[in-house]
Length: 444
Image 1 (cartoon, helix red, strand yellow):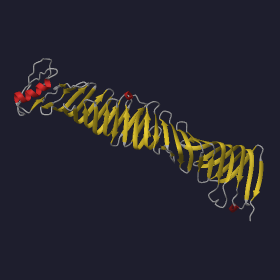
Image 2 (tube, rainbow, N blue to C red; image 1 turned 120 degrees about the vertical axis):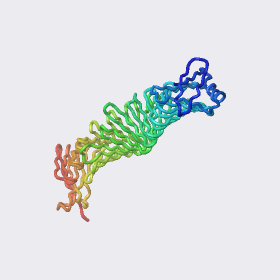
Image 3 (cartoon, rainbow, N blue to C red; image 1 turned 135 degrees about the vertical axis):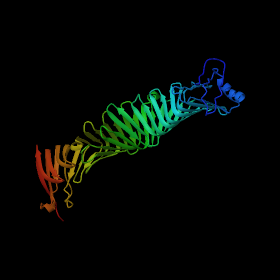
Image 4 (spheres, rainbow, N blue to C red; image 1 turned 90 degrees about the vertical axis):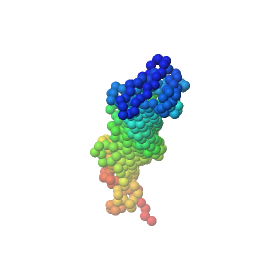
């Protein structure tokens, strides 16, 4: 066993060859100059180029030495190892087997450690574990810098933030001390537990900021980013995302794309735009600029969408339009109501206009219905009924192939409802101050 005592004298044991029993010698050093004496003792007294200390077949063996440096940081303490070798040329400690070091509040363990005293660099190989307060870095290999307390881990990296319930994995991690943050690369993945909900973020590069970093941003992922809200069945892809710990929400840029999946649903809901935010608690996504929404044959465009997944609502704001193969709906504002991830109805306000035509109506222009407000119901992804309110007007263009005369039927009323089957008019009803006219089409 190797011990350092407070005795001011020093004694260096000369260990026997490897094929002889291990010596039980002790190492007694002064507080400030023992390392220099250690080297002088090796070279000046013994003539050996290095000294070895072994603790074989001793489960409780502890080998430790304390290295003082002229720096503001606390010294590195070697608390445990099965085997220690110290060289005098470059002042390096080689420790093997159950190695445990302490540097202030940081604890480092590994299968093997090379501690370069002059450079203040600790190299760890095999089952590396670096623990600092409520965080732990695991890796196959790591390099630790004593002065800055910066660590670089490689191979099977895992970084656990126990205080935040967050785990990061990848092939390489740069772990900084002040401020406390990390950069993970090599297929990085962040998993965050929010109550019973699990959120996963992946990308090519992931920055993570611990709570002590005093920043609202918790994580930044870049390049081919994927964010998954498993409980809600929401997947968002983009080129960059910033995840904020306050309020548990994220900002997405670089062509974000949201996909909402529902078990048993025929179609997914897909929303794209230039920018996007998503609230992981309230399950609300807000998408900006050139927004497009698709659910099977039903599609839509607008400037902004507010998608409330929990309340099953999609609010289309500013220049909204929705359409399927046979109809098109426009207005100042469109609110889509969902049921079981299917669009059940839409409320259109402002100057609401609907246009429709059956598939075989290439010979006539589309019929229309309009009003200050409109309610649309859907059968699957197709428009089933349209009801216009307040100054409602219906203009119907019958198909000549159906045997009707050329022209259009115009109906005005307080309320008009039309029933459609894939764009074909089945029925029309009007209520309140009803007026009807027929406009003949003059042939030349």
